[in-house]
View 1 (spheres, rainbow, N blue to C red):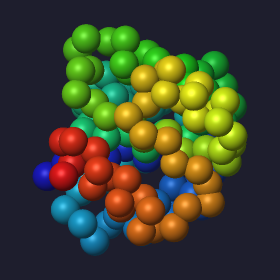
View 2 (cartoon, rainbow, N blue to C red; view 1 turned 90 degrees about the vertical axis):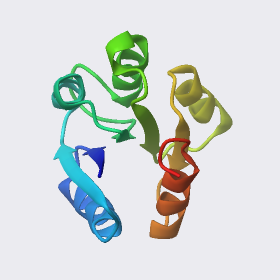
View 3 (cartoon, helix red, strand yellow; view 1 turned 30 degrees about the vertical axis):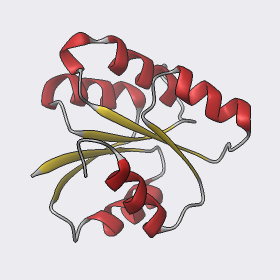
View 4 (cartoon, rainbow, N blue to C red; view 1 turned 120 degrees about the vertical axis):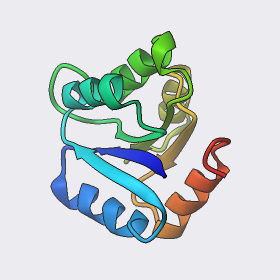
Length: 123
């Protein structure tokens, strides 16, 4: 069973994503901050992190993504960034941070499922 970590500071968004994915064969976990997400990833090493870009606290989503991708022990953890920012420069910043994919909010449940299916280890 694949483990997916949902990271968003808004509980409603986390709940909507969970509801989208709960019918598939995933173990779903949630965190509300970048700091908590990074601790979870370093401890549990989920298969995929669905990571909001704009979060309060010391680490926004881009920084969490950079730290995950820079850590050799976390090789193979895939990061799908979620953001309301959809301009080319925003997407480019996400890809430069090491994201495996970038999805612009609002997105449909089908878009999320398609993006997950397109990730190499999730197919």
